[in-house]
Length: 364
Image (cartoon, rainbow, N blue to C red):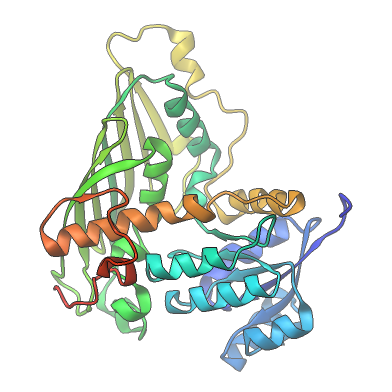
């Protein structure tokens, strides 16, 4: 493959996330990737999307698209209950996959996706764009290098607001179609960033409740998490919060790191507060010395995937790394619904919470 050869991409699912996030990301990399096809089971929506995004080929099924186009990359923007089947079919057809969050409904489905990958590609990567903003990459590097001292205490809040009309879409708020409530559909991005900042967790204790929305899943979840490095974190996921905020705070021995935003951040959304004993001004200044300002967008993540495709290597947020947030959420649900702590790697294929996030029972 030459340096100037472009990948051929197809988009499956022509809704808001495809138009608002994926199309801009793909256009930003137009010298490396070309959108050759779109797929949607609604012909009217498909035709409108093709016209809006200037995509010539349109299909109402993934099978038909794969047979004709044979794309290098398939971007999956459909409802969660379809992700695993589409990803597996595309991987088996030889296409790499970039799948929206949540990647699938369960750890069992994620294992199916992993099993369809091949050494050297194709691989499936999950859209977790908050790891890729320059501010996030800076914070991850600082914490992992020990530049801010030992991680001690953390807070991760996704306090958003979704009214009942939001849940009028038939697949939302149902275990069998969305996989869970705000833990799966909203807070998953921030929890993935928390994992990038703090590393592997070892124990979870959680609660979940359905307080105000007419849904099958929870509309609020809370958890306490202990990490392998000793740090302890609290997590809140809500769709009941009128003043919406996305907030992460990590207190370390030498500094407090904070991020406040809503759906995406820039460098200015990160704050560093030195501990009272840290007085070296040059050291403090180095924490925010970031040469670029890349927002936490799909456009920030896509180049990493294309680089991996070029090299024939596993991309970020695939395989074990892509599973991290899903494992944490499964543990949160198990702890919340059984009332007991859950240890890391405790949920194996024989565990009902491996097959479904609610353990195949109606807990709420």
